[in-house]
Length: 97
Image 1 (tube, helix red, strand yellow):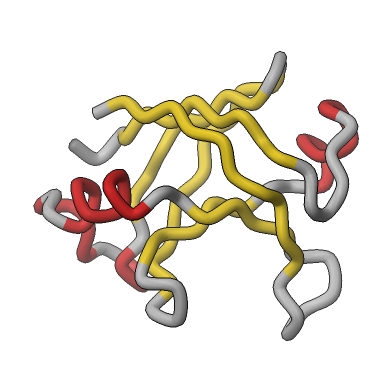
Image 2 (spheres, helix red, strand yellow):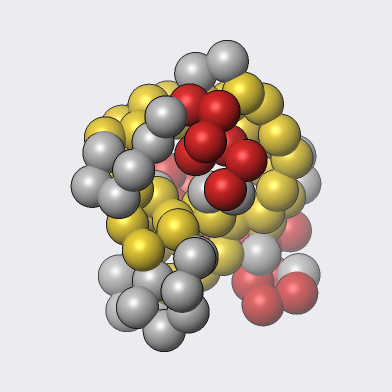
């Protein structure tokens, strides 16, 4: 399962340094239907590419937004020159499917 989308980078208020991108609702709905979407904390393993940077991580359900969130590591943000509020072009492949 492959998704391409653009979404703003935001910082979680509860913890300094944690940044995320929220998946579009249509992608989140499809991911939520996967059999593997119930592993640890409801996370789903993914392979992500932003610009020239690719990495493996997981997306996590965020009930407050009704979607999944993608953590954006500092190394990725630095390599791609991303700051809070920037629009991020994401290519995401679900690994658990």
